[in-house]
Every structure is written in C-alpha cells, then in structure tokens.
Length: 290
Image 1 (cartoon, rainbow, N blue to C red):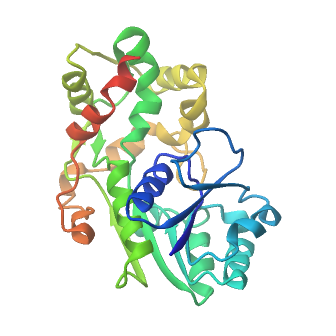
Image 2: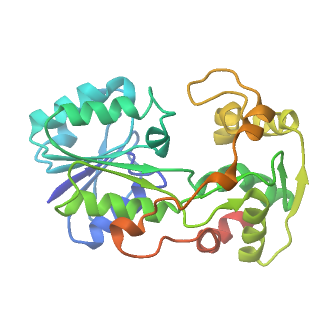
C-alpha cells in the first residue's frame, strides 16, 4: 500500500510516518520544504503545500491512502484531486472540538469534504495535545525551571501524540474503520498543577509554579513568541473557538470538571491502554532540560 502523509514533520505526522515504515508500507511524506533528515530512510519526501493544491499533483500519483492534515480553505479541492488520482481512503486529523460541537469552521469543513467525496473515510479527533505543554511551558522551564500559570487547578485529559498516530495508522492500513469518527483523550483528568509536578518528576528536578493573572499570562505568551503567541487568546480564554471575544474568568467558572465522566481514549481502537501524561513527560524530559 502506498500512503501519502501530509503534515509529515508535525508531532503526529512524523509518528505516523515512522509506524508506517515499520509496517513495511510505501510512504510518501509531504512537506513544504524538503530538507535532509525530514523523514526516515526509505521514505519519499515530496514538496507540496496544502494551501496551494496545484503543488500536490505529483505527490498524489498512485497513492492508495491519504493522511490529511486539516486545511479548511482548500479541503474540497485537495480531496477532489485525491479522488481523481485514485486515492480510495482518507484519514483526517481532526479535533475533539468537532465532537463537542465547538468547531464549525476549521476541522468540520475538512471532515465534510472528505465524507462528500464518496471515498472511505475515518476522522481522528484528538482533544488537548500533551505536546502543547512543551510548546507553552518548555521555554520557561528550560530557562528558569518555572511555569507561570493563571489557572493551576484547571485541567483536562492531555493525549499523547503517539496514541493519535496509533489510531491513524490502523485506520490507514486496516479494514473496519471506514465511516468512524474516533475521539481521543488521555486516560486521566489532570490539573495544570499536577501536570507540572509530573514533568518535574520526569526530569528529576524541581519546577516552580507561579500563579499569574490571565492578563499577565497573555503578556508572557506574546513575548515568548511561536505557538504560545499565535494561540494565546484562545488558550487563555480571551476568545472562544470561533474567534469571538470572551471573558477568561467567566469561562473558567462556567466549566465544571467534576461533571465529566470517563472520556474516550485510543484503547477503544487499539486495544491497548492509552499512554499516560507521566509517560509523555518521561518521553520528552530531555526536551524540557535542554
């Protein structure tokens, strides 16, 4: 089977590529800029950009299955090209926000474009990525061994990127997943305070937790740049999923974590226990130290 992985150098995509290679599949990795070491040995690296569908023609030739990173603006055109090229199965990297009804204009249009194609489809809908904590907390932990957090007792079920990849690979390579939407979370509800503790335990070092206001956190993330600055207003509750202005304190008060029951994890698909945040922290301890 020949499989094209878009978003191949991302946190999920690179794990999908690795697993597919280990399983002996012919893998193509799509990246906007090919560079040495962008993919494991034996993987064909293709330059292309989902925001410019005309760059995908060569990458889609003789492909059986497609792992699709979500780009809503071009989804219909990209899916149409995939169908014309002979792709028969598409697995979408979607979001748990679709399941919850929050996402109507980012991941949902991609899902709908794939469903309308008539091809086999599976949607993989992860909730909060554990990797977000490396992007948000990594810089201050590396520099000062500190996390500055406005809501230490808020929390969620952070999911390991390898669990997401496990489910995607099964959906790409095995029968029985067509027409399914898999919502994935981590196995434990963890406050931000507890997440910091688990990262500290994995590193074998102390990490201070300083409580700041949402406004102070916003300034910190804006100054930090990168992922933190790009997503600061949504992450801190200054805007909702649709980009509308909201009040961080009101959002926190309205959301009652104690009302949540068990959340779906990768175990329902893989048959193996979902990876814990503690395991994720051990997997990435060196990246917090550097």
